[in-house]
Length: 153
Image (cartoon, rainbow, N blue to C red; front, side, top):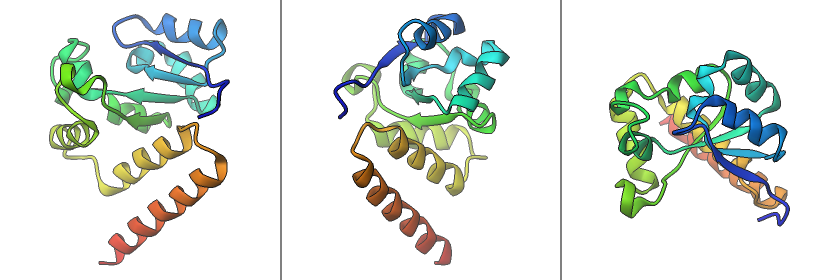
């Protein structure tokens, strides 16, 4: 991980303005959560333009009553808006799910999400990581190869 990486929790329980403040004041490179960005269309445009990753944690969003249920979760809308969205777990013992459980629950609640969406979410996660560039490129190559092979099957 890069020692100068700047990340902030913002826009989960708090308003979209917290995301803007994290970007402007803290100069963060990634926003943990960020789902409330949709309350500010200009912020959504900014996040898309800048490619600022959002590490979204669907099961914690439900536990914290950010959304009434996973069917109401805005992750598909975030993807449609061109945001760099990733799926993550958030304190699995407390919020009830590791990474794969977040994916499964999300996909069950949003049957319109396809393998292409999963590929994009996984790709976003790798690109948003603070791993060395060469390692990220190798992982991205493996991911793309896997999905290409799966598409041929």
